[in-house]
Image (cartoon, rainbow, N blue to C red; front, side, top):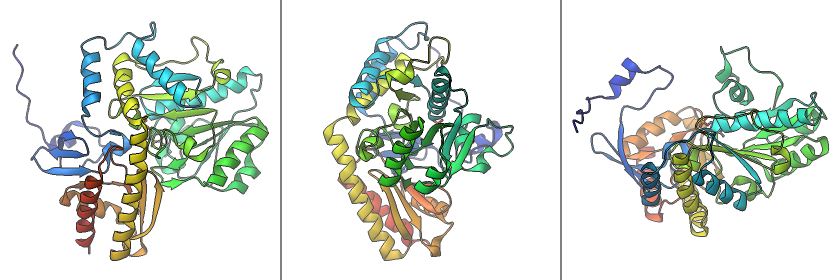
Length: 405
Ligand SMILES: *Cc1c(COP(=O)(O)O)cnc(C)c1O
């Protein structure tokens, strides 16, 4: 075979050939292993970003690589004119481990959320309740970038210039039980929230708020939809954050960590609600593709193990304690938030607006971190990260913070 030599490209190539909607860092990652990455210059990084909570079992986990290569040599795609074994096995595992009785597979978080919102509307309309269309969502929420999900999101700037936007959405302050009580009515179709807001600054719902959402939905015949695209798949220390809260949704969307870096998402629901999505009502060409499902099954098996979930809890506590110590020593953080291995460190008044500076300083020290807005540093490492790796990452973070002025 005559394999063409790869063309030399660099960060500069990006500006020449890509739409400018992203502004990637100067370094270009080249390969990864577990919680570590190396860039094209060979520099090593500890990865506390995990591709924004996606690489849930680290980079190139051998079980996942094996599942991918086995399936790659067997069958990639058949379309939804057929079903396939990896999709059915994966759906069975999710049904066994969660409230779900029915699944719909998608390719991304936004697409899983689209399915969730469409299902909620369809469900009420199939019950003869065409008036029940209001979706209550929350400020600072992030649900994706399609027109429907960007409208559901709670950052109006993300929807600017894309109008006219779909109607029927109301936004309320997050964690405000009284505001929800005042707004929800028999015209409410669904209450839609992230149990732990990720992009919006790593803000966890209070237990009282989650309980109130469930009770008020029941009272008004509305569906409770949880967006667990970021906080699901083990990140909270439970398989899903709803299990951490003990509050069961009617519909749940997930993606990010689900495929460990391979694009896949899902909408989970009950049989009674799913019934209205009869043949022809919804679909996705790649949804439930055997290659994606085989990878996600290997990821699921790694995450849905008591020792993995226990590791999330223990490493989460370790990381939280380290952040608190560094925050106190350098006066850099005013609050450490989040659950499990989805943590946010709010910058103190002295460092307000400098999350990006911290990210850059960390990069110099060989540590990848995330931001959530301009004043929160966000961490979401591999769920399988070791105690030593967390310690080493914290040492690099301290080095980075001490270099700030
Ligand atoms: C990332 C994210 C999405 C969007 O997922 P995509 O795969 O980018 O479409 C939706 N909801 C939440 C909570 C997210 O974090």
